[in-house]
Each structure stands twice: as structure tokens, then as C-alpha cells.
Length: 621
Image (cartoon, rainbow, N blue to C red; front, side, top):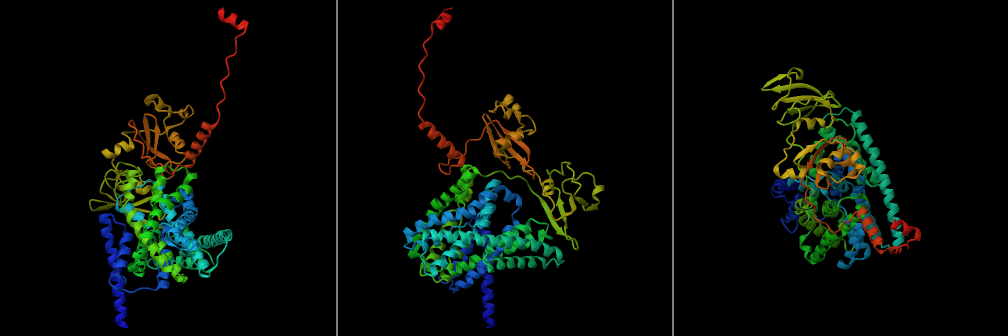
């Protein structure tokens, strides 16, 4: 018995260590990291090293807890600013988009697999949600700096689309398990009512749980080493409570993290570091367990149909769902196309594919195997093409800031403050003489091995180490002051323009000097207001506005979204690649109006009126 404990521990930790080391390979070659995790699990399973693991209940239990931890960290790391920027498009994709994908994919599955209609829609629900963990790893590993609106939409969608996929999957499993054959209209009504009940209960418990987590952390002065464990345990309690009363535990734990992460919770930097590590561990364990549970020797029998379904999901079902959901939001076609492609399937799809086995369905193992192959195909095909596609569609923007050398230190006995240690890097605003704001309290400066008070050091110089005592929710302005600006390289000059213009100057000057194409009412605006109006009221870093012979480029915005710097290019950038699909709502409206304008009969020209004698006399005169 004792030897068995040692052996199980040794094998388990060896697998986790192997998965952790695989991240080095992924960073080096840009491979999808989650694909490596799955590969290690498959290689160690019954058809590989021979580790037998066929406990579906245990796999689902471990996967559900791991997913809850990942969702809490995802919510904790999502700022309200990101939510405001892309909340509506992302939430539409996470709800209506999942349902549309389920239906479209289910129809294809019915004709390719021989499953019943309910089983086909069950398979569609299992693979309908996206897994952004692989996407954002690839973006970081490939040094891909996406446009903020696109990144925010993908981030929020991935954190919020799991609850509806889980609800649809579990509901369909229960209906099939009891042998019910409901009418289509009754099934739709039951699904809609059940969905709203689960989401409302889950949202209520999540918001209340997040508020209580913050209050309990502030109420009890726990040891710093115990505090992250305390918060993590409370998050799992929120997850379990919502599920126990019939709500969505996954939605509840995400919202609890969102509330806690955007409040003035104590020791936020420590909590973020701990939760990031736990999220990595949860992903490793979940993928290893799911990989061990799979049986690759069963794949050949359904390989052809599974690959066809995977391609159908990537090239048909997901793009149609994304296009329909984003029509009202006027996103450029390039952004819609990229969002439709970056719909990688991951651990959640495999986890949901276990539920048919738990329900004892006849085709449960076939559904699991097909879902597993679809996830593998998605990680391979989509995972390796995210970077090239983003560059092809012109969605890559230059880095905004250069190096930042900072250390965050929490102070014992201080509930709401921490000590930040910055090293002044060459080219940063403070190195150029910009003052540190009054709300920050610089307490110490170390220069050439000597420490002195900030007030006695005079102007900061490159290489100084500055210690600042600030609230733990300090504004990001400090990071901007101590980070160097990224130098505009030769290949980026075309992007930002060769020189800058003052955004407060009248836009009429652009028309007078450069011949910019402006309407009469636009000439009365400032350059900054003109850009904002042309972009629909919302501006972000690297936005571009074409004005005939010139382009205006947003070089920088502040924390409130106000334009700080504008670049001007006298050689307008070439138009982005044409995307024939994904028309926006405004484009569809324009085409409909042009269609009816062409179809409407033209009024016949009126014949010339014969001149009267008086008119003839006047003309002769």
C-alpha cells in the first residue's frame, strides 16, 4: 500500500513536470501549449506508456474543479475597462453565438455520423465554446500585439461562453438518458426557460459571492501566506453553492472573480500571482487527465467523419455564428474574420464530451472520441495559423511601451498600500524630467550605491532606483512614467506617420495645407474631435482615419480614452486585404438601399415646354 502511494505520486508529479517543461518547447517553436499537454497525456495513457485511467466520474470532477479555478482567475484578471470596451459583442458571441454554432454543427453531425438529432446537437453543444488559453499563449509566445478591441472581445468571450455550453450539454444528456422525445417547440421553450433560471441564479450568487469575498478579506486580518488559499477556497464555495441550488456554478465563479478583481481587495498583487500559478496548474492537470482518459486506438473508426466535422466547425459553423452575432456592432470585416477563426476548442469541449458517458448514453464513447479529435484538429490547424492570419489581416500594431523595470512589495501591517520599486530606464518620461505626481509618495532614491531622500536627489536620472509608497490600486500612470517609449522603427514609420500633429488644432488646417477631404461641418472640429467622430465615438491606440491624400493615426491615448498624440502620414497605407464575407450591418443596409434604388423606376423626363409669344419676344430682344 505504501509503495503504491509513492508510485502514484512519482508518476503524477513526473507528468506535471514534463508538462511544465513542454512550455519551453512551445515558447521556442510557437506550438500550441495545450496541444503538448494533451499529447503528454495521450502518450502516457493506455495506448502509450500503459497507464490505465478510465474513471469518467473522477475525470469530470477533476476537470470541473480545474475549470472553476481557471474561470475565477479569468474574471479576477478582467478589468471593467476591457468589459466596457468589448462587453456587448463578446457577450453576444458567448450566448447567441454558442447556440447558433450548436444548431449549425448539429445539422452537419446528423448527416455525417448517423447519430440521432438530439445526439447530434449534443455533440454540437460540447464543441461550441472556445478556449482562449491556447490563443493568448500563442499571442505572447509569438510576440503578437493585437488591436485592443479584438483582444478584449476574444478574452471576454472565452471567459463567459462556457456556462451556456455546459447548460446545453447537460440538459441534452438528461433528455436523451430518460428516453424522452419532446416536440421541437416544447424542447426550445424548456431550454430557454432552464437557461434563464440557471443564469439568473448563477449571476446572483456570483455577484453576492464576489462582494462577500472582498468583505471577508477586509474583515479578517489573515496571514499573507494564508490569504490566497482563503480566497481560492471561497471561490470554490461560490461555485458549489450556485450549482447546489440549480444555478450555473461556472458563471457564478467567473462573476465572483470579476467583482473581487475590480474592487479594493487587499494584497491584490499577491492574489494575482498566486491565482496565475494555480490557473497554470489547473490547466496542466485538466489536460493531462483528459489525455489519459482518451483511448487513441478507438480513433481510426471515426477519424474521417470527425475530421470533416472539425473542418466544418472551423470554416462554416463558427464563421456564420460570429458573422450573425457581430452584424449590429459595425466591426471591420478583417476583425470579424479573425475573431471567427480564433475559435480554438480546448479542455472544456473534451470535459463536456465526458457527460454522455456519465449519463450512460449508447453513443457516449463515440461522442467523446469525435469531440477529442475535433479539439486536436482545432489546436493544430487554427493554433499554428493565428499569428500569420493576424499579420495578413493587418491587425498587428506596434508595441506601445518599452522596457519597464518594477518590483511590487507588500508592506506588513498595511491593508491597502504597497511599496513599488522602479528603476529609471533611459528614455522614460521621468528620465526626461517629468515629475512624479503628488498622490504618489516617493520615499527613497538609490543612486550609485547611495540612498537619499527623494526630495534631496533633484532630477531623476537613468539607473536610479526609486521606492514609492502607493495604494495597492495605484493608477497605471506610474508605469507609463517609468517605462520608455518604443522607438518608431523604419518599418513602423508608415504605420504611425513620419511626424505628429497637435490634436487640439482645427481640422480645417488639414484641408488647407494637405488637401484633406473634409465636410463643411467637419472643418469646424478639432483634429482630435474629427478622429473621434470618424471612428464612431470610441478611439483606441493605433486607430487610423483616411482623409483622402493623408492618413491620421492615433499614436497614444490616456487611461480615459482621450487622444494624446496623433501621427500624420502623407503616403496613405494600402487598403487592408479584401474579405469577401462578413459584411457589417451598415454595409448590408447600404447594399439593400442600392439594390432597391436600382430597381425603382426612374421618373420620365418632362418634355420641354413650348415657349410663349411673350417669351419668344424676350429672347429675340
